[in-house]
Image 1 (cartoon, rainbow, N blue to C red):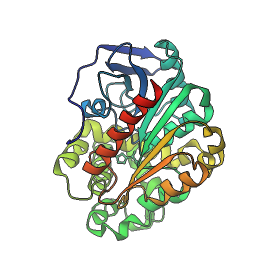
Image 2: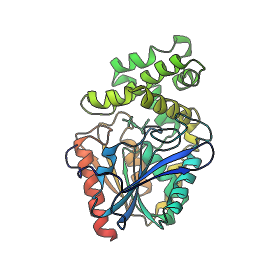
Image 3: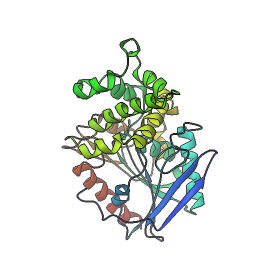
Image 4: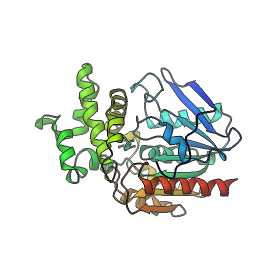
Length: 316
Ligand code: STX
């Protein structure tokens, strides 16, 4: 990706047992005495990727990245047991105290923005700053837009492949219909459903087609974790009350923030960034005119790096 820092290897990794049966993969990159920052990946269930380390200047930041419950290198893979937004917020606090960090910058895109907001509203005193991309408020209407009615009108060709997997009689609730298949006892059915689910998302994530991103999320292990965990969260309304994150935004008062969102985001329409900015006006809103949803979109990556650079200056 252009505009990102060079790739680095972690200076330390951890296998952190949290609530059984979950064991989290955690890694620290950059500089051990640097400004602490937490990276939250998307999905939920997408896992971390080495490219995620590259949003931060390794000579200034101590970046903590972890694979959320059930995905990436965390175990057990694909597990939905005790997998809730509240549990992930508790895991973040567990990681913070385990690493002896007092306060940190929190960075998250898409579902990572959802989780960052849930965390910051629960523990505002622990957050130095927020850098959020592709805001996903996870309200019923945001989930409906992408998995029932809305985005289907923008990508009808890709939608056909997503919806045709489900018999017509079940199409009035596609998230529920996919959930039955993704949690079925039939491993082949689970995998087939996961592939369609993950492909739909990957194909809608970028302004221009990105075959590499598609291939990445079509990979069976990754598709399974992403689809199972996302679908589990979305049948449960992401374990949030409607408008919970907007209503709690008063708790963000005093936290410096940057909101970066692509104008042509089809996964998470940009209205969500405006809605968040309205209740958290002290944050800076950057709408990237020629970008979709993904963090890899050139204009989005550049705006995110500019944000972490500026905040490093301001916070140190
Ligand atoms: N999922 C929102 C999200 O976090 C509904 C997300 N959107 N696209 C992605 O993640 C990937 C491209 C990483 C799969």
